[in-house]
Amino acid sequence: MTSQSQGIQQLLQAEKRAKDKLEEAKKRKGKRLKQAKEEAIAEIDHYRLQREKEFRNKQTSVMGSQGNLSAKIEEQTTETIQKLTSSYQKNKESMMKKLLNMIYDVNPEVHPNFRHA
Image (cartoon, rainbow, N blue to C red; front, side):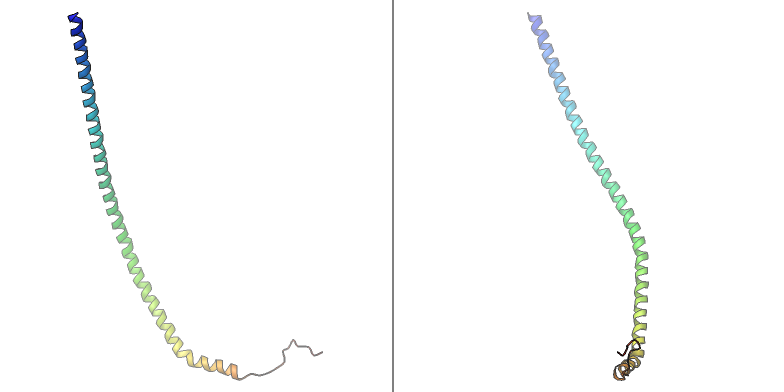
């Protein structure tokens, strides 16, 4: 009987050790998963920062050329506005005279399509 109880005790102790090893393995696995997740997040953040830096570099190179283009367009627009304003000032008086002459000098005449009944 004592050998049976010793055998049962050994089995229970072996079962307990196996259970402890299993729990320890689960803890290590959980720790490793957490560590892997943190490493992945760090790697993703590093990659994201690198890509954002590349994007900003490309954006500044493109926007820089657009800034020059914008300045040229602004200069051309100002020049065109000045030309139109000077042309308006030069031709304003003569156009006003022409319009007033057309309004005041009315020549009444019968339309060529009018038929006298």
